[in-house]
Amino acid sequence: MTTSVASPTAIPGSGPLPGSTGAGDQPPPGRDWGEPLLHGGLYLYAAVCGFSISAGQISLGLAFFGLLRLLYTGRRRVKTSFLDIPFACFAIAGLFSLTNAVEPARAAEEMKKFLIILVFWVVYWADLDRKTQWRCLAVLTGFGMLSAVSGLLKMVYLDEGWHQIRAYGFFSLPITFGECQALLALTALAWLGAGDDRPLVRVAVLLAFHLLLAGILVSLTRGAWLGFGVGFLALVATFPRRLLPIGLVIALACAGAALSAGRFAARFGSFDLETNYFRLRIWQVGYDIFSEFPVFGVGMNNVKPHYRVRATAKDWARNEVHGHLHNTFLQILAMTGLFGFTAFCWVLVSAWRFCRHVAERLALSPWQAALARAGPAIFLGFLATGLTEYSFGDEEVAMLAFFLLGLAVSPYTPRNEEAQAA
Image 1 (spheres, rainbow, N blue to C red):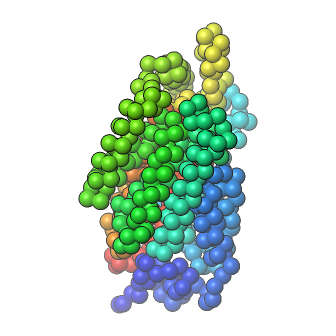
Image 2 (cartoon, rainbow, N blue to C red):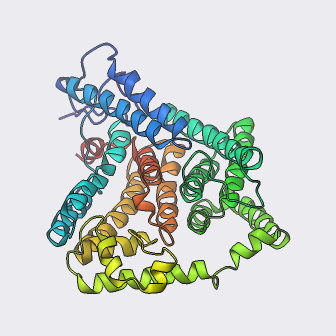
Image 3 (cartoon, helix red, strand yellow):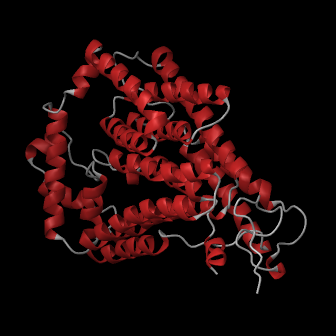
């Protein structure tokens, strides 16, 4: 018996669905309006994600409606991934945590955080071909560079000057600006690692990377620096031949900037300052909260009532009574207990395994396989930003991380692999 298998790199909507195994699986003929709506929404998000969370949400909403249309007409299919079951367990852990919530209404409203998986699904289920992946990367990198440059100009000419404040771009805080810049810089670096045969494209991506790096530096945000540093090392380890020379140059440049600029040098060596002392104090309170509710936690977004009980007079005097713990892992541990923390770690491991699986098992083009291999490094950078901030709770940062993860694995279709094995 002979089984017909569609090419995994076929352009969606231009022939058999990825993974289709017979004529009965063919989509209806002709172009559907859901296709431009899906792709337009993805391109629009790639353009605005470095500027506005509201515009980003609207863009992803448009892409989602386009995807629903394509699912309805049979031009796309729901695809399974390694993340589905672990993330469902993570959401169930959030549901169980509501039993301990002091403020149940607030906790129930915070459950919407788990809708972040929709960002991954929209891009993953889109079955993006190589050309669309490339265009999304180009828009992300190009407009990310513009957000970095405009953020720098805004800081110098419209705000108080680089020597007095930190760059925050068009966000409300330097933290979210810096973390988004870090993820976009890692995206540009992943593109350089994956390779491109066109010299002008390589030069443009390298320029964008350096401007994004400048945006990270002037945000003066530890989490962004940590996230970029960890992701940077992971990408250099993934593509040593292409990225090691860039890594050496960047390391020397950053060291020179830190030594020559007092503001940066002070920031790099500021771990004994009071701001850092109070961050340690926040983590101490967070651990104390977890130790009292170790199994299911205190409930989503219910840390602050417990923090108030444990706050000292000095905490109140410094206005250091927090609703989040400036650490993604500790925040999840306190909110959802060991149940949720274990599920969250399962999600992270599954994301890593899935990207490796896509790169190794699917007959993609070398560039697509390389992009899939870069996915874990970018996601690792996102996790590292959470060592000093609650980056999973910053929607603009988390949306970008899950978008990039979906972009890395979007061409993969489990049905193709099953058909090839048969």
